[in-house]
Length: 296
Image: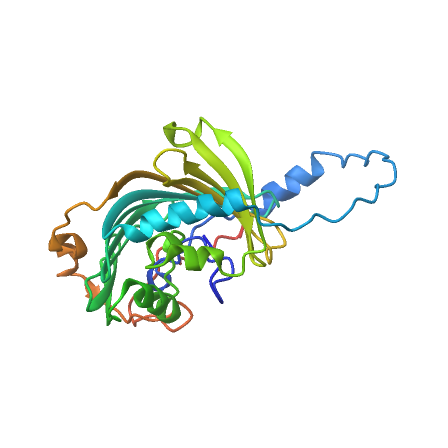
């Protein structure tokens, strides 16, 4: 979940070609009623804030060793599959953030095959990379975009983001060298302790940060696999939280070639593999883009 250059707060999956965005508008009328129905509480009088010493940014060897063990284990796997559940906060008109969730089934075969099938609080999406082309498919809208892809997963992830703003929050786990991505620009890392709650197993908790993002990670104490990560981005003034839960890990499974293609795209309507800010294909209409109601 390391913030890549120009990704901003793109931890949420940038679904293919702006086919949809989550609808979380709260009516102005409700907001007004809430405002009129309650009186603002007077702030409690507090003593002058005590001046505290700045936090010392250190990188603890124990934390760094745990991070390295996880990354090395993932890098050594020639194939893998796992389930990724992403929970992220989005601001509402009331100010209090709302929570949305996506669930992705991820299949990886290094160096040149990837499948990500996503469902959740929004439109479903499928992404396939077979070493030659990358395909983004919206089954609900029956739209598909296909483009020539680079020869590796790493370069394809970058091409998908640069050309169509498609981003996966677990990208750092599936690149060829996860440790390089995680440790790049690291300014803080420390060991927190153990948890026996997350992932149904004992985990070691570590926190680490660069100049863009602060992450707390839960790592399997025995298998050294990531179970959960929580991130807050420095550039985000609202300090919204993003959470990635990882389960159903399989390392080095035998994967059929059919896992990296979809039969559902044969009859889908083609559209350009392009950035969401570019004009949509004529006749294509993102779901939810209806005439706004007066309350909006």
